[in-house]
Image (cartoon, rainbow, N blue to C red):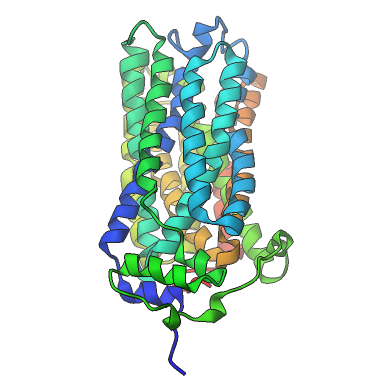
Amino acid sequence: MAETRTVEEVLRGGGFTRFHRRVVAITGFAWTFVAFEIILIGFVLPGPRGIFATFGIDQNAQPLLYFLVTSATLMGSFIGSLVLGRLADARGRRTVFLVSILWYSAFTALTAASWDPWSVFGFRFLAGLGLGGMLVVDPVMLSEFLPPQSRGRFMVLLDFFWPIGFLLAIGFWWVFIVQGVTVAGLASWRILFVVAAFPAFIAFLARVTIPESPFYYARHGRLEEAAKVLSRIVGKPVDAASLSREQAVPRAPVFALFQGALLRRSSVTVIVWIALNFSYYGLFLSLPFALPVFAAVGADVTLLAWFFVVSAFAQFPGYGVSMYLVERWGRKRTLALFLILGGVSGYAFATANELWTLFVSLAFVSFFNLGAWGAVYPYTSELFPTQYRATGFGLAEGVGKITAILGPVVFGALYASTGGNVVAPLTSIAVVMALGGVVLAVIGPETKGQAFV
């Protein structure tokens, strides 16, 4: 009997090809504008040219309404992640992604037509449904195309595109919100949501050229189709008869995620994604409420913009170090270290009372928090077998987005209860981040070098 190979073995033998470069570029382009749009809402709600000012609402008088609207996309993303992640395991990654990105683009553009804060909330919630599908399926598909020897660093590379979106959001905020540039008499924030939607639609057009995951086909016994996709990926013919039929498995029930060997992996996933989402969204969507801290050390709006720019640029070396360490040192240890040091840096930022300490500590928070985000994607993709991978990511993103919603809300509640003091809410963010790293270090399995199953 002729020797057969798994999809993983074919990808390993084919190495990193032109197909992979195109997939990474397309995925990264979509990732850039996801970051742009998520960060944008925190910039366009407050201020004299922001959404709340357009509708005559004082954000300081209604901080919880502010944080509720800020979290609307995350609420929708929670539902989208759970439902669409499971659907991607059952019906295929490609179709779910294409529908998700079109849905997301449409409702992001419609946000520009909002007539009050609640319509903003509604459009952002609906856009979040599509965003949830994108956040789950995009990294799953990328991980299932990549050769195992390159998977870790290129999964981290995906997150290199996130600070590009952050920088774009800062630039557009400065031009349209701070400087007041407008087009056809439209409110500046309305223009920005149209801008945020258009690149996502372009990414959809590019994504049409990307096939279904070969792992998905193989797990469903569709070896002819898996072989055709593998031939495109590795750039040479792959015979379906050479693929192992043992890869085909029946659809697995969701409750098995919380039984046996998967229980530990699911628990670790939940804990890590809680720590990351609470800290990232709690801090970066709440920075406008930290303005008194910056003002107390003499920072005006121009200097504040530079604070944002420094925090964005600090993310690039964070990803770079993470990219190196996940392959050299391991996924678990890299992620745990970055979470713990991110928590330490976060506390330094919370208690800083001088300009230079604010700059340095915010840069280090960005370095470690976003470096941790880079490590969590290869780690999560390797924690779950193929028939659970999108479902596992859906669990991670779903639980994470609940916590991402709680981050700004807890920040707002602590901010209001302490009379506008930001030390307590910023400290809570730092503590959650560090605790996530400690728990991961104690109970998390290492996945470096493990084959996809």
